[in-house]
Amino acid sequence: MHLNTLALETSRPLFTNSDQLRVAVHTSAEGARLVDCGVRCDGGLEAGRIMADSCLAGLGSVAMGTGDPSVWNGPWVNVRTDQPVAACMASQYAGWQIATESFFAMGSGPMRAARARETLFEQIGHVEQAEQVLGVLETGALPNAEAIQYIARECSVATDKVTLLIAPTSSIAGTLQVVARSVETVMHKLFELEFDLGQVVAGFGQAPLPPIAKDDLAGIGRTNDAVLYGSHATLWVRSKDDELRSLVDRIPSCSSSDYGQPFAEIFARYDRDFYQIDPMLFSPARVTLMNLDSGNSFTHGEPLPKVLQKSFAT
Image (cartoon, rainbow, N blue to C red; front, top):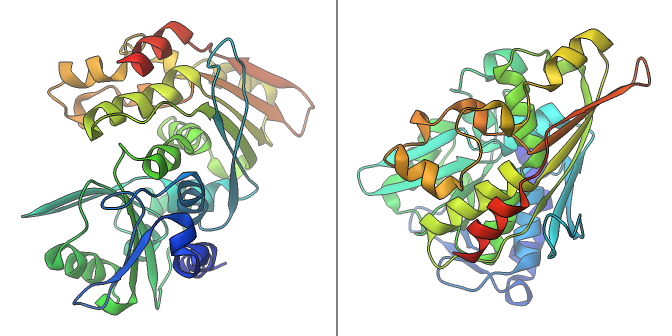
C-alpha cells in the first residue's frame, strides 16, 4: 500500500479535466506540478472533493450530503474510510508547517509519509520511500521556488517529482477539503489520549459545509467551528467496553476548557497561535465508538447550533 502512488492516481481527474473542474495546472520552473484549486482560479465542489480524497491517499471517500437540519440546514460533508490510520494519520493530518523565508502553508497528504519527521510516525508506521510525492497545501499563494525545493528536499525526491494541490481556506475547494476531516480529528484526539490506533477498524464522519468566508482568517474560524461544534464522527473499534466507556467522555471538543466560543474568538485570544490553544479542543462535537467485540456503542458530546449560526453569519 503505497500512499503517494494511490494519491497520485486519485488526483488524476484534476490533471485530465482541469477546465471542467475550474482548476489550473502549472509546471514550475523547477518541474513541480502545481494544481491551483482556488488561489487564482475558482475551483469548485468537485475539485474540493478530489483534493480531500487525494489527501486521504485514496483510502477513503468524501461526498456531499445532508445532515441534521436542526444543527445546519445546508450541505454537509461526509467522509468514510476502512484504513483510518493510514488515510487519516499518515496522510490527511495537517502535521507539516511548511515555512520558508517567504512562504507559509499547512501541509497535509501522503508526502508527509515520505518526509516522516513527525513523531507520530514512530508509532503509526506507514513511512515510505517515494519516487513521487503528493501534498495538499492550505494557503493563499502558490509555492515559490524556495518552498518547492524545500518540500522536495524534505521528501528526498527531485523537484520534478513533486505534485502539490493548493487552495486557500476562503475558497470552495479549500473549505470542503478542510471540513472533510471529522474522522481525522477524532483519530488524532485518540492518538493524543494514547489509545492504540491499531484497534480502530473503520471510521465515518460528517460535518456542516459552511458558507465560503471573505478571507482566510474568517475561513479558518468557520471550518474549525464546523468540526468543533457541528460534526459527528463514528469509529468501529475492537476493544474492551470498560476502556471505551471511560474514554468516550474525553474525546469530543466539549472536553476542552476552550470549548463554547466561535473559533475566531478563541484564535484571537491566543494571538492567532494554534499551538497555544488547548489541543483537546480539536475534535468533533459528538463521537460514537462502536465496539465490534461486544456489539455495544458509546456516544458523548452534542453539537452547538447557536455557535455555528454566529460563526457562519459573520
